Image (cartoon, rainbow, N blue to C red; front, side, top):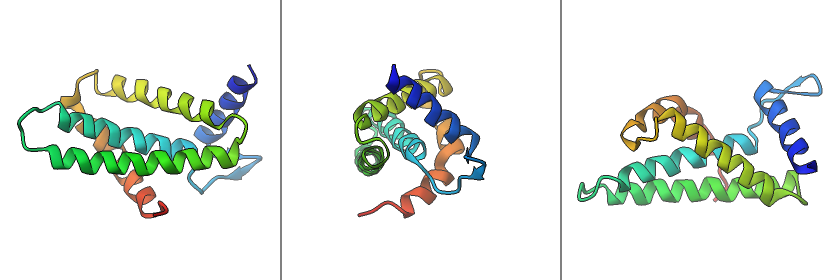
Length: 130
């Protein structure tokens, strides 16, 4: 129960963009998980087109996803040391469902996600640690 309350509080603060009356400008766990999911969806889109020669693009997107996942888990450990795994998994499941809904469960529609999130994720990727 404590985990869900903490997660709801965290999500509400993240989505509103405010923490204790101050505007949040630094990206957080939610932003990095969202971008990890974007790259996961793009990789799955490339892999769903068998024999199309897009395997190298799938590998690139998978590597981007892994970098975002790694950083997301590090942020979760830093912010929520006792519940990091659960919080990360809850965020992951939320964005998995959300993005599947946005593309109507069809990887051919992944361009909708790229249109929405590509610029934000490109900016976050610049700040990912090596």
